[in-house]
Image 1 (cartoon, rainbow, N blue to C red):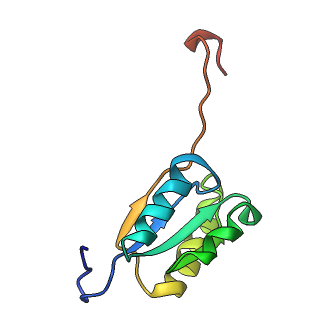
Image 2: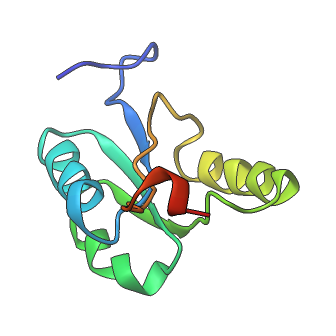
Length: 102
């Protein structure tokens, strides 16, 4: 397991943890002994993740204003005092012909 500069398990902040890769990332990172801050637009969708070792959850919408995002960073830092790794997984797929998408 890789350690942070303080010799502690790394702290990972993962966005988009409601389903898919984000949820899988949290489970795998936790299983390897690291700490995780799992985020989602709807915090209720990830409440079960707190059962995993070293996992904290918080609401985060990555499309929020910069002021809101700054406040969310402070909130996240309040859990473990640092963030060593960011997994920017939040997003969605919009499919169609480029010229027809808005």
